[in-house]
Image 1 (cartoon, one colour):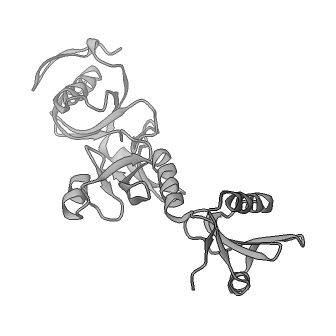
Image 2: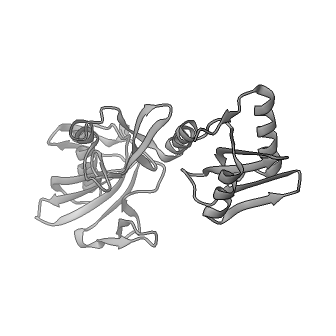
Length: 272
């Protein structure tokens, strides 16, 4: 726990009542920009090898570039603080951190905040079958997210793109909702078709998982409608069927789905 009581531009600051520090006060030119093998960029301190931004540590940390009273430009990190901590309080924390190491700060120039979300995306949730992943959200290093491709903030997307229902959502939450929407949109009832339609589906593209055991037959189109959903064609006896479902559905489950639809009398007819 840091112990520092100092007069700052915002009043007296006692770091002894605040969070602990993991400190590094180093020259400004020790912060270098690196490219990750996966393609994104990050900033790292060559003095202590601490990642400045974006930060991967689960504890929210702050970094800042400051100007000392002797005119030297330097950076300080990584003060632990909640994402909602008041900017004035954050500035005082950096001033105190430098003071403890014998450096007097004149101004706190830039404060970098740790992103509050792990892997966020801008999404539009209009209806159960209309969920759109709009853009990848990139933290600006300070206070808000912007679209990777659009460069717009959430407020700008809501007003300029005419999408009032757009929101930020973690990928782990967004993807299942997207898949559920696609299933609601594309997966429909079993439809009875004629032999010509069956052969057209078989020959138009290379089939996936083609099974023929005489009494029944099935295959899937290799071109998907969305995600894992594709068109499935089947023959049971002398009748032919078509429906959309998961490309990984095995033959026995395809036959079982059709037989259940026949039992429930929910088979629709192909209208030419």
